[in-house]
Amino acid sequence: MSCSRRNFITGAGVVIFTTGVAGTAALSSRRSFASGEEEAAIKYGMLHDENACIGCTACSDACREVNKVPEGVSRLDIHRSDPMGEFPDVEYRFTRNSCQHCENAPCVYVCPTGAAYKDPKTGIVDVHKDKCVGCGYCLAACPYQVRFFHPENKAADKCNFCRDTNLAQGKQPACVESCPTSALVFGDLNDANSTISQAIKNKPVYRDKVTLGTKPQLYKVPFDKGEV
Image 1 (spheres, rainbow, N blue to C red):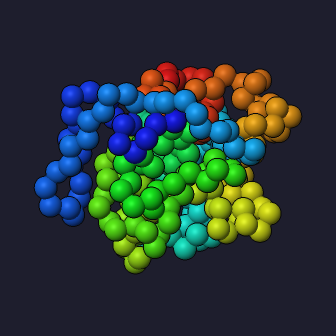
Image 2 (cartoon, helix red, strand yellow):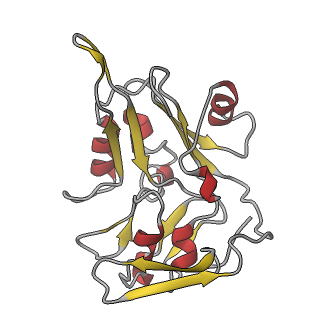
Image 3 (cartoon, rainbow, N blue to C red):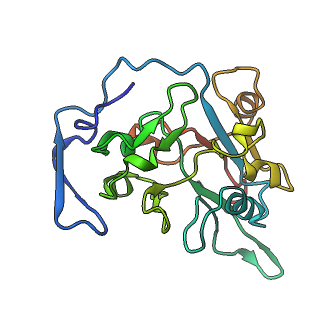
């Protein structure tokens, strides 16, 4: 399933407000998704186990160091819930917030220059920084609000599974390598025998905002003492 840049938003007209861009842009369409996109030979995805995560932020620290992410912005955040229970028996739920690498990525469809794109070989959603004009459409279109403007190169940026760093060196993404509790699993979702495919098969999982039709490739094992 795919949709064109022009047609990804349905309805009579949706106004996108962008930061740093004068005025507004209205996008309308007659349809949201169309068939015809070929599936990548490899489709990378990630699993975050909320029961194993202890909120140590080693993942976000490693991401920042490996990918040279400046202070003030982040490719990966771990959100902590309000306390559950009564002191001293208090527990917290930790959830991951990062690019979902959507199969139907709104950021790609709204980009007017082709800077936002999905790699056909891996399914990774990424950015051609030299093509980015800073219009902010992708930031506004992302339902997960995980994109940001890089303060140094002024281009849109986000998690790309360490595609240019660890992945290029044959390693796992920095967040996966640094996790002390093995709360993160990364791999090929098209391989039924991969560790991530087996984990998704054998664990209860959910994905954020699936009703939007984005088909996110970030899976989560829900915290068993809370609610999804």
